[in-house]
Length: 314
Image 1 (cartoon, helix red, strand yellow):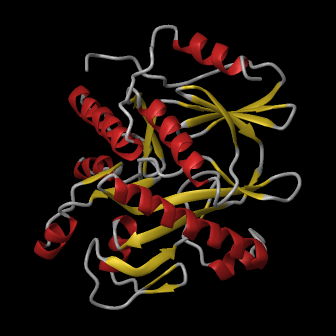
Image 2: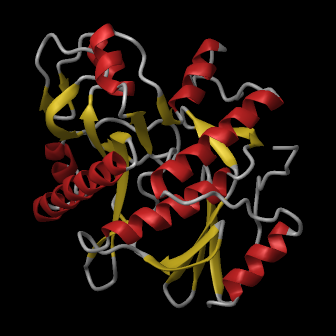
């Protein structure tokens, strides 16, 4: 893969556009007729800080994996997608998002492991037994929700606090939890067919104008999920070795090695070779998760391409 430009920022003016919001990775365009356009950029974030550098094809990978996985789970829970007119863009229905990120964990890994290692035995209302090891499977998946912060770090929250704070009613949280566990089970099954383990993931839910709860945003992508390779998982676990994984965790580990964990606003500059490795990992995960060969989108006149493809379905 030679040097490729990245989509760092978009500033479109779509027909009937009423607002635009630039998130950590996605640019969200809202239209007057309750439609929403999500454009997946090549930005990368970690520890809630966004790098000034982009990762080629990252946005395409995220957009296309999300579309693939939402299509594969729409019989379980309705979702927001209407059309995917461009490799980097999806058009769908607008919903008011619950201000909670629903994190489902099948294994003790990542931030949950770091908390456990530091002595935590209760995470978001889930009691964990003593004696667990890193990357050990839970007897059944647990949900560890976090608040969805406007700025700064998301905070762990319990289901009781979600209801007390009015972030969701008890009935809504019960439905969301059922949906999340069912979609995670489907995701684990799909991953297993491809030689992967879906370790943990983040879901976001919203409510439409007719009060229907739907799945929004992305699912089962390397930005929202952690995957292990299935074939040597048990052997590595038994030996206490690190798991080979396809997720953004290796970027976080590289940043930690640079002394960065989000406490300052300056994201370290990533060498070109490391950016290339990140891009290749994203592409590898796309091909593993979907079973399809990755076809890189044309970056020549990329803004015109996205605008024209989206406009054609509006």
